[in-house]
Length: 347
Image 1: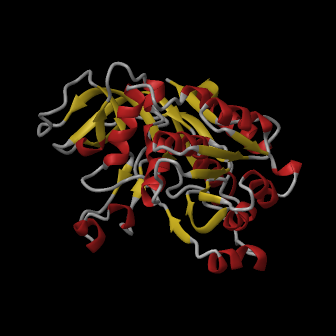
Image 2: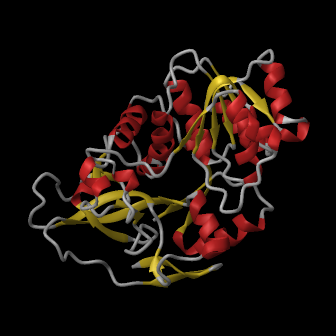
């Protein structure tokens, strides 16, 4: 079968691999139809390297069931499905208490076991979620990143009428904008240095677009909010600079939720750090997308909102490419000469 194997920093190879086979009675084999590149994939490709060198990569994907284990009685061959790629131990105190996102062994497919950048992938039955006919495979490949964004929103006290600022309009930021609106936000401020991404933010629901190149972000937000700030600020850019600047955006008693990972030291200037104390901010960290009962309400809410047309993900796709272009497209992404939002592999 086709596959993308990740061997080291900037060493991704398009190779032929053996197809997976059923070994346990609860396993399911999926024919992958679409798979997306995650922002965390870019950081691993450019800086960190693979968890397991030579492993088949990828954790955002969807497809159809082609084979099931003997104990799988509630899933038919031919079923159209999305995948929750999270793998957890099930034995630690966090898993036992239902706090699966805190499992110290939590990983996704593509880390230690083969992932979805391949024609076929094998996963446990509990990781497989039916999708309605109204949801395409391409949309279903967004279920996991959509659940990541919603997991973060669920951490907060977002209520109808809230004002929300989203820092960073990559995939997670653009999804967070939509979740904020679905949850009742009255106004969403989208912040990014690339106007092309701000244009997409406008398409998916942001009312106010802010480019840091036009002036200090804090001052722009204060101008728009009459000096008050927003109810909730979402950090989705995952950069050391924005991870500091985001503290200056909420109002007194406001909230900040971190969805991005900077993969570098964050140096916080006094001006920004003091906002936590002086504004009495509540700060949340959000990790992965799962909750209990596994895989969690984040996944089912995502699929429901796709089904009824509230969550729109196709505007986020900037590139559709075959799997064999994997090594080339990763190099183009880190070359930073084009604007990329979501790159979708078509298999």
